[in-house]
Length: 497
Ligand code: TYD
Ligand code: MG
Image (cartoon, rainbow, N blue to C red):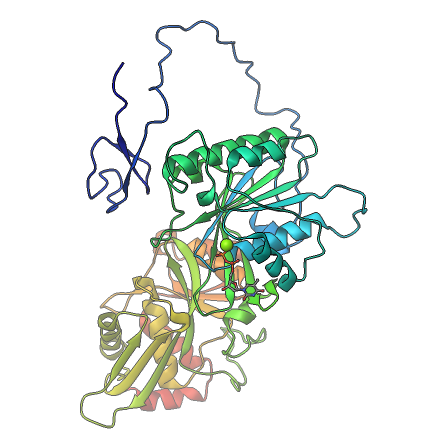
């Protein structure tokens, strides 16, 4: 019998190596290999013995399906992201940075499921919360803060999958089981430590199998690494039906729940929450939150017809419809322009690239006749976000032009597009995702590049209900901004060379 060989498993991608190396050849991650003992004898192929298999009963694509109705949590934003509620028997993975509010959200969801309005007192509790990270007292304390302590949630502190399966493998299993977190769970049949790839995979497999067998909704909390992916193998994302990410900027109150995979619904929905002192509150009108500190969007403020009054709106700010890590994000770009008092004008850039700012200033000067360069310029991306994509060019230009002309950029519009040295505005990727996000967050219009390939048509904007304001050249942005107020044109002419 061959000696059982040690193997090294990458904790990022799950690929197996026979030797330890500093860098995984599979995914290129550094220092991610951990020695794990082989689980069992290598799998045998079917070549030796093909008997014993039963023929499959193939069926057509149409037919009666007996999907049970979805279970609503009562938290509307969460239900929406899941495609209208949890599907019984499905497994959901919720990832997010530490402290973002995963445990809070799921405790709130469990409490809401356990005591839905109108449920009779005699019915058995329908939600269980299993914590492998916190002590019972900590969870109770949080429940108290959230005001859900009276809810009949089944609470347990456990990390042994065998114990969990033993307690839940029964006919009247709860309808929702939250496991916080999958990285703390362990299977005693495996030798490796909790959190390693084989443990995460093994534990998840057991729990998912149990959920399918008993028809309950399984919610697994997954940690993310500093790169932002769920720790452990990508394999985990393949095993579950739905993957949700809970995101937010540190120091800010809003949180976004986003589906990145959903076998039972679309993945372009987001849910917006606000962290308060009583847990996570739903934000039905998120644009208010995103525009906090900005002027309130005015529905009457058209793009084509000049607004009668811009009182209360601040110039020098534009909302950029961005795309970070392949996920859409809206962020405010702010610019301040002041006359330079001493020799060399100052440039202070926070959250963006100073070189690209210099380029846009040069293009504004050379192609649009706006002399911005001689002034002190301060550029800030609000919320502490760092933008790297060139699609922000047009937003930066909009903020600059608005600051210079003191014409507010429409508060109900987002803007994106890449600026070429010629002043042309080039189309950028993920247009549809950007527009959908903007529509979801309550914006009405998008200043965006012309889509030349389809003859200047704006199908995306029409689909999402946003009004598209096509910008083919940077000078069009300048004209449009200044024409929003007829009497302002004169002062713009004075500024222009
Ligand atoms: P938590 O749900 O523990 O995060 P995760 O499970 O994702 O690590 O969230 C903890 C944070 O939320 C903590 O920093 C405090 C904050 N918080 C509030 O602001 N209000 C509240 O009512 C609760 C319960 C937590
Ligand atoms: Mg937690």
